[in-house]
Every structure is written in structure tokens, then in C-alpha cells.
Amino acid sequence: MQPQQSRRERARDPNEPIELEGPAVFDQGHKVRALKDVRNDGTYPGCPVGDYLIRAGDIGYVISIGTYLQMYYIYAVDFYEKRVVVGMRAKELEMIDARCNDPQ
Image 1 (cartoon, rainbow, N blue to C red):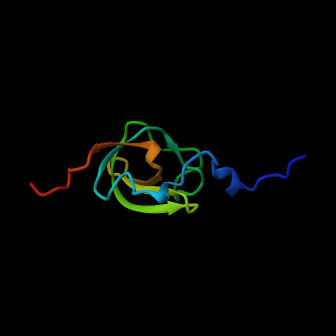
Image 2 (cartoon, helix red, strand yellow; image 1 turned 45 degrees about the horizontal axis):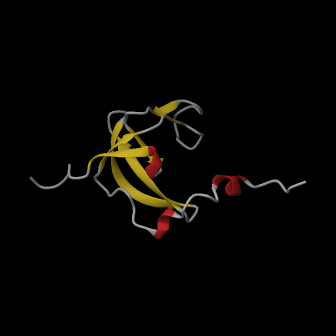
Image 3 (cartoon, helix red, strand yellow; image 1 turned 90 degrees about the vertical axis):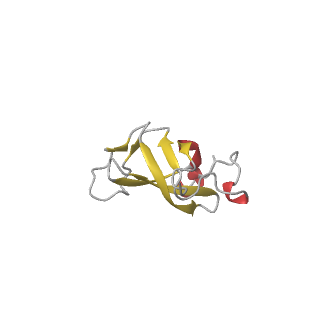
């Protein structure tokens, strides 16, 4: 019988590389598209658990970059049309425009 894993241990996939060993995929200001639906897991205030925060295809801008579990970059993305800021991993996003905030 194996010991039960903690929630934190289950969050880590031992086959995934440690993203923090390399540079972040996105920078602040990059325009990105969500690749998956995101529901409130109880950490988003003012919204019932299970409600959709964003849908796949929604467009937003990276406003900050943080880390999670000392392994992953987490990108705070402002989905301005939904008036929602959601933390997402690089594998959940695709780049639309890296130069959208460059001076013209």
C-alpha cells in the first residue's frame, strides 16, 4: 500500500521540465489567446465556484509574470473584454502579437 500523496505533490508532474530553468515564454504586454476554458476553482472572488471565468479563444494581455511551486511560470492575463484577470500556464496560451505595445 502506497502512502497517500498530498495535494501539492499531485500538482507536480514529475515528467514535466522545470520551466524556471529557462526564460519565460511570454513578456508583459504580449497579446495572447486562451487555449482552454477556465472555471473558478474557488480562488476567484465574487464568482461562484465552477462558473466559467474565460473560454477558449478569449483574447487578453499578459500583465505580470509570477511562479508556482518553484517550477512553473504563471502569467497574469487581463481578459479585458470579460473584465477578468486569470493566472495561466504557457501551455494554456498562444501568442497572438508580441509587438502590439511597441511604439509606432
